Structures are given as C-alpha cells and as structure tokens.
Amino acid sequence: MKKLILLITVCLFYISTNGQENIKWLGFEEAIELNKANPKPILVDIYTDWCGYCKKMDLNTYSNKTIGDYINKNFYAVKLDGEGKEDIIFNDHTFKFQKEGRRGYHQLAASLMDGKLSYPTTLFLSEDVQLLDKIPGYLDKEIMEKILVYFSDELYKTKKWEDFDNDFKSNLK
Image (cartoon, rainbow, N blue to C red; front, top):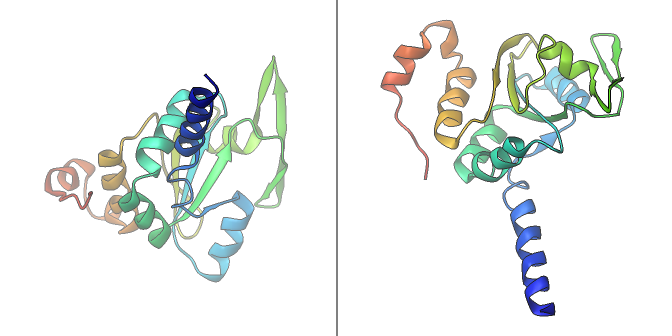
C-alpha cells in the first residue's frame, strides 16, 4: 500500500510539473519592463487555481515543446492569476484584489477581460501593449499554434482569420 501511495505521489508531481518549465513564465510587471527594452508581443494566460480547464491547458497545450519554444521565441509569456492577491502597477494605476462573495477577483484581470471573468482566457497584447484580442476558453495545441502564428507574425493586420486558418500548415510534433 505504501508503495502504491508513493507511486501515485510521484506521478502526480510529474504531471503537475512536466512541461511547465518549458515556457519562461513572467509576472505582468516584469513582462512590461522587458518589453520596454526589447519589444515583442505579450501573451497573458489568465487562470485560477480551481479552474480544471486551466490545468488541462497547462498539461496538454503549454507543455507541448513546439508550443513552448514558439512562445519563448516570439512572446513574453505571463501567467496572471484572476484571483491573485498581489498588487500590480500598470499604466500608472495600481490594480488590486477585489473581494467579492466567498472569493473575489484581481482588478487587472477584470479590466483586461472587460469584466467578463472567464477562465482560462488567453490575451494577446501588441509590442506597444495594446490589447489585440482576448480568447476565452480552453485552447488545444492545434488551435493555439495557429493563434500564436497569427499574432506573432502580425497577420491579423493583413489577413482575415478564416483565410489564414484555411492556409495554415502545422509544425506540431
């Protein structure tokens, strides 16, 4: 019985940590600072600790080596806890945790999502930190790959998503 418990513990630890080291996740303020010196788009993964689809996205999408390598090369990647308690300063404003009911929410997450708190939500900010798009819901690795290329190559400026989607060739392994 002890061996079974040890095996389960090791497996759970491996599952919870596997792939997460692949992406260089940053804090929001850190990404904004790095962007000032070396501009590139910012990907923001808004999640909560209790969100099952957030965990599934970490496990199945962000842990993919091709996805992780692409994000690291082309974006500053931010994990933003939608219910985080830490103050975040952005655009000369301090965003705080807002208690509401049993839980609450972080004001920056609510502001970025226009008050529509949905987890997970993936945001894309331009090099000049303008919101390009917010995509609520679970994104599998195939969809995420397309979205990453669409925003990092700035194809949203010249192509409709439908045209891009039809012509896209995957590099997933």
